[in-house]
Length: 91
Image 1 (cartoon, rainbow, N blue to C red):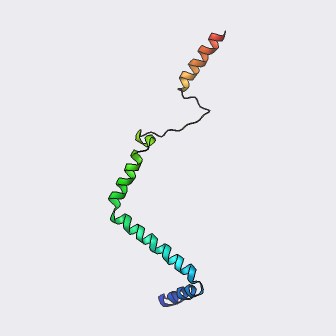
Image 2: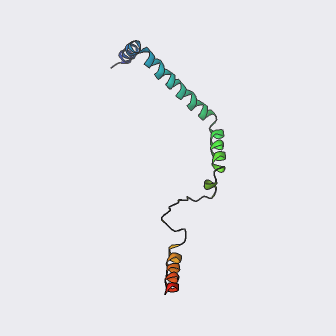
Image 3: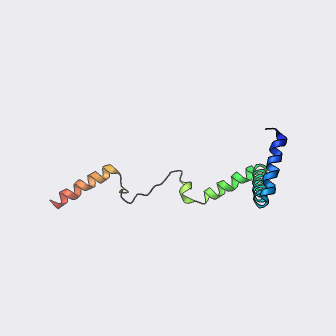
């Protein structure tokens, strides 16, 4: 298909569905505008992301923290030793 046939097909679809064509063009224009803004101020964009990350306390430690209510917060070997002490104390 040549470029002129493709253009004719696009124009025909836009004439049949004008509102849809306007919404697609508006979305495309907004996307292009945002991409150009981010590329122009990419350094400041990354500074803003880093500033936001600095305010989140979990990200400041450099460690991923997961909470599982079924797992003891103590170390497994300490848990085993503690269980033995508790069992000996009961006897």
